[in-house]
Image 1 (spheres, rainbow, N blue to C red):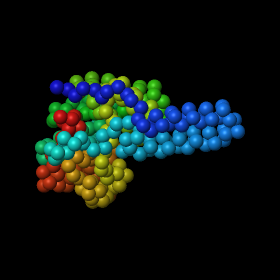
Image 2: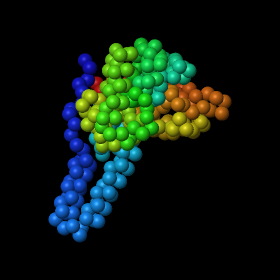
Image 3: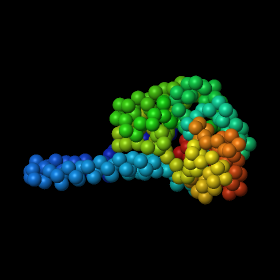
Image 4: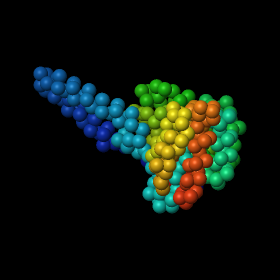
Length: 270
């Protein structure tokens, strides 16, 4: 049975507090015009706080966010390997082979436009038992400053693209670079999508030292972890090898030794 969508949107405590701040600031400025500089300062400070929270990918202040697996999945010794920015015709097939070698499942957060270029590769991901989830249609660098309509267009286009290719509409969304603003959560709720971030990452799009990336990931590899790696936009080692291909075997071996079971995010819902 497919998991039910998330409940309809409810404003987070931070958003409710922000609305109250703006309301009080407006009321104060109207009732006592001499206080308008203070009212404006309060509103500006509130905007800065909300913007700062949006730059914190693992934050729960703007709404629900999977930064770790649910308690039941953690109790089952499960972890989630999540792989972003693909599919990539050179890297993704090699990643799939490595996952097969360890009988591990992963969640691929795919960019809709890339999936449209390599649809068979997306279908191969699903055929091998993995999940394809929504990473927006174009992975725009300005995603976190878009309004609700722009965000909705990006998410809906990716839902349609990935659903048509794989036969399964995504249940999870990961924002480009993990950055967002308060408009995202209502859009997710309307589409029945869950936001997912991560608990551990190695910055494998920027760091080309595979040993350094591996060390960061293994340090946080424990039950309930959501691990972030990249098949698309992967940094290359000095020898020209995508970092994920040198890092993933060590992560999978360590998980196996610790009796950690890599599952898809959807499986972790059970």
